[in-house]
Amino acid sequence: MLSCVAQRRVIEPGQLWPDQHGNHIQAHGGGIVKIKDKYYWYGEERRQGLDSNLRFVSCYSSKDLMNWTFQKDVVQMSDPENLGQGWILERPKVYFQANQNKFVMYFHLDNKNYSYARVGIAISDRADGEFKFLKSFRPLGRPSRDIGQFIDDDGTAYLIFEDRELGFHIVKLSDDLLSVEEEMSLVKAPLEGGAVVHYRGQYYAIGSALTGWSPNPNKFATAKSLKGPWTNFKDFAPPETNTYQSQSTMMIKVTGTKSTTVIFMADQWKPSAQWDSRYLWMPLDIGDGKLRLPKPEPWSINIETGEYKIQKNH
Ligand code: GAL
Image (cartoon, rainbow, N blue to C red; front, side, top):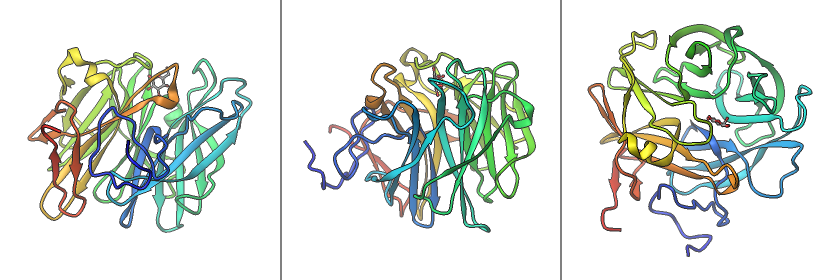
């Protein structure tokens, strides 16, 4: 047993991941944004005993990606648009609008049977402040379910969203981050849990098949530009493992003084015990248009150098 205050020196994929109080991190379907030297992890708060009429988004902070401090639930929202019982708020992603010093949260807003299919926006003046609901819309006028977040090296903010009929879209957000400015790509593949990373001159897009909470072989494609053309989608983990029982949610790039590491962030859902859902984070083997998710093992990262280390024989 780890004590509450013990510093964590490894990330253990698939295990309980305690915060500073020893509670398992509740940031499912999450997103991460880096502000100065701090990472903020937002996600679906699914601890037991929550008011079932409200939806909650948690916020954790960290300087090393291994030790996370629970800040608070930055969203405690009641049904914003008469969606009825069982309404859905999933996959929150926060962007920082530096000129206005605003934090803009996107999330999947839906009714119980997922037919509303919109994105919602909530905003706050602080990373760990209270996010207030602003509006919802359908990006490009299209149904939108799972969303993903991508911020390019030049700071441009993109939203990825799943459109069941067509595939998935990568769109550029407006400067104020409150609307869609331009469609970059419509990738005609039935994928959700979409994520993108920019690594050495190439864009890598990943996503999972549409199998609800059950894991499946996630796939990737690459392109030289966000406008495509994209290669065909291929497996990046042995397909029989169903992505080591996980579903993609994001990729984070850590650029240090010696190396650059791209981390695969995924959820291992437990639909009938969501509070116990786990996270599978692993450094990816990436480069030259190839992508591979190594077998999950405990590992550590050094944020300064950007290097990671797999803990063999733990
Ligand atoms: C998944 C999706 C999750 C959640 C779930 C509901 O496909 O990625 O975010 O919506 O379906 O069944």
